[in-house]
Length: 350
Ligand code: NAD
Ligand code: TYD
Image (tube, rainbow, N blue to C red; front, side, top):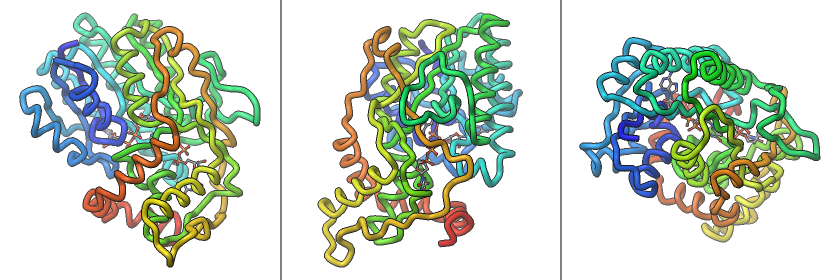
């Protein structure tokens, strides 16, 4: 691996992955980060990498749907590996306005696959980063495996499912050297505060209401983003071509448990007599339509084949994440302007 194209590298997981490549993975090659910079993409997330590795980090502002630009970037930087993160990623937005999800997640993946096919001889791997949401919803028992049927329930999940199918087809039909990972919910630094954990941290810190959908009984399987990055790196290095790997935290929590834990940790880490106990800020609000009840991943395959296991416990990961958001006020204030404010007004009426 000498020249690695990362799509969506200015987003939450992509930026953590690029930092991981330079600081943890022992990667010696060049990273080309191709990102359109939607509301969720922030080049500030990688300012340190751009400063510290000017010879080995390149940023290209482009849309993955722009075939000529994508093809030119693959050729110009002699890309031998692609790691595809770029996507519209927020379920609630996909319910309000699905168009961008179909365009970026389905058409964008198609364009990238076509560009990769043209370069096929120089390409050692196309890794597609996907989600467990493609499998739909579990009842109280059982786990998603790599063999679980696809039953997506939100426009976001359906668009990711479609992209997974395209990736699979390009392997079966054209022999493209693909791998796919389907991961559970991530949390950690640099996550855009529209998602549950950073939204609740920032609201609880500020004494604002905490909007929990329905009765808060939906279950998510939480994984710290660094554990996800390590899984993707292992798959790129040693994963078998044509294979799918499920990645999960073995860490199921109801949303209410997660929000209550955030409240308790903030009461401890940022004591405030006027707000404590912060659990009082919880408000049960109208449920999300089509809201999946439970996600839980069986990650036995990646554990057995690649020796991966999550390292971060939920409690220590949550503490670190809360500390990060409290320490990065300027980052938070910058992403909370403009488009973010409009979304909060439209979606939550605040
Ligand atoms: P994110 O929304 O934080 O970042 C997405 C990035 O993609 C942004 O930098 C954005 O500018 C870029 N982008 C969007 N449309 C683009 C386009 N047309 N062309 C080029 N760049 C574009 O998302 P994330 O949470 O970091 O998720 C990254 C990937 O991981 C996604 O494919 C998502 O489906 C998958 N995933 C996320 C989670 C999670 O919990 N966040 C879990 C499993 C899988
Ligand atoms: P989210 O972070 O949007 O991830 P996903 O929908 O991809 O799992 O939401 C995680 C869970 O938290 C999900 O069950 C919906 C719920 N949720 C709330 O209860 N309130 C909120 O304000 C948000 C954003 C999410």
